[in-house]
Length: 505
Ligand code: SAH
Image (cartoon, rainbow, N blue to C red; front, side):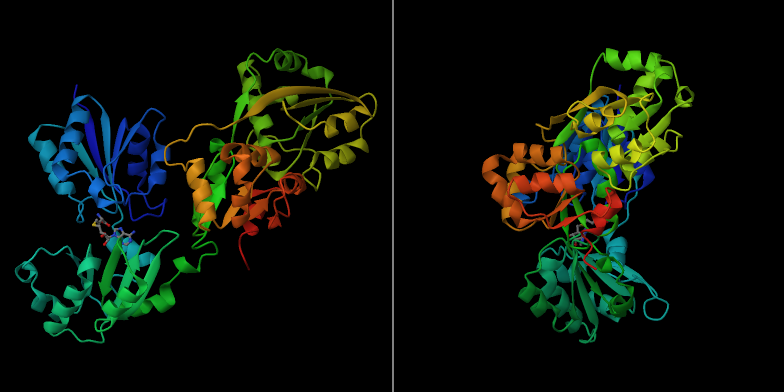
């Protein structure tokens, strides 16, 4: 059976500038064949068994020739696979999507094309440049700057120079001199504003502004490299007012997130939305304890307890999974007072439809013990399902008042493998030393221990190159025991407070 090929536009780079249709196909793909300009974070959407093939490695000698890409698409589809061809921007804007579609059509292979946000429009938008404007640009023209020799014939410079609309050249930075000279030679005014927009919509977007007369000199001075768009026209001046993206609080910042893969998405999303680049470097994985007999027994005898305490969102998740597995639901908890540590735990519980009765102001175990001690009597019996490596402080201080049944639910194990789109520990160390990482976030002591486990004790000093952000006092203490300086500690143990530490107001 023949599979199907989806030619998908990945947009210009910002993770969320992908269509819902595109996302859906990535989730279902058996194979993803992607280019250099497609954001690699999209590979994380794919299933664990999906094969990801990079056909456009940064050094151009690794780029797969187009005829080989066509053959690869057809071969994989003939194996009955769902094939995604992921391209930067829109597949039909200088993306050779048309050629690929024709090739598949000629071989009777089913395909679909999913448009994307082209850099020529969306990329300019993030640079604060609208491609048209009622006052100064009533048309736009997107032109390839990849000029063949004797390009004079290919492009009608006189026609272009006489147009009032916006001119956008893609793939043109290495021909910038030729482009400006040809336009000036054809009579375009030398004061015409020009913008060079590199890595548009990404944390490292950069923009150089000049005129048709001086932009080439400026580009040389700044050492501008691809991917860069050249935009020519009055609309460039609007950037002064419309530059919303570079004003974002984390714009330009690279931030490493060390949580589990499952938990990191919220923090990563917040960082990306604030204009920064979140780099996933998971250090721990949560593994629920299998055949947890003690938990099963506790769930069968919930009536004996008076309190239920959750110390982490993981505990909530695993406990409710077990509850469901035993054929019960939240109603069996109705008689219990429920206490939580931390906003995130409270939220996880809320998602199960339960409002926590108690939450101490400080998200540490000792603080919960203090808060509960006032109301507990020796008749109470607390069920405390938590991590197998929980600290003992909470149990012993509660046990001083009443009976506590502490049941380990899960263990945190160190991450060993590097998943798709993730950085290896060697690369992380290199980038830290090169001062390319601005912040590293730590959301628990175990993220600290296991991060150091992953990079190796000998590389601890590399961490001093980044600003280290801690979720709370215990994590801070752990960082300090490794001789590391903590830049800031979150006011409260929430992702919002963690992100606040990075916004230099
Ligand atoms: N199909 C793509 C364009 C492919 S041609 C699209 O619709 O956007 C590749 C050229 O596009 C690059 O040389 C550069 O000029 C431009 N380009 C693509 N993405 C870009 C980005 N994020 N920032 C700046 N230029 C970009």
